[in-house]
Image (cartoon, rainbow, N blue to C red):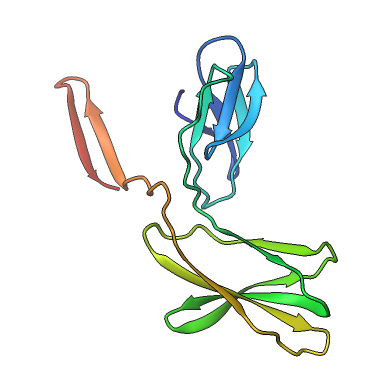
Length: 167
């Protein structure tokens, strides 16, 4: 796979060499199938994904460790909405206000979480009258692909030397 080319703040062109049918995986999950040697993808600022392009329908993508957590919960009777909170420095901090859409289940996706850190979240049902239900809490240890090193490099063709330094 060639180096990704950034088109704008959210668009990237992925390209590779070869011909045939290609199976594109994002974070270990099949993202698309194409016969083209390139693909345009949208990535939210701050998101990090691992893309793999395979030329076999039976080949397996590498195990992925996505950078975000998705909280899913069953809706409760008489809930108007839900507050999603995260424990930050000992204080519960509101992260989202999720409406009850009558589907029976709700979900919310976190920001990109720090690797190797325990995060604690809770969901609280709130009735139309403002009464809060009992919180359901979860603690997770985020294990994901680490951030790329913040390095800058220069290559001097004359002496065939590569200089590395902090970016």
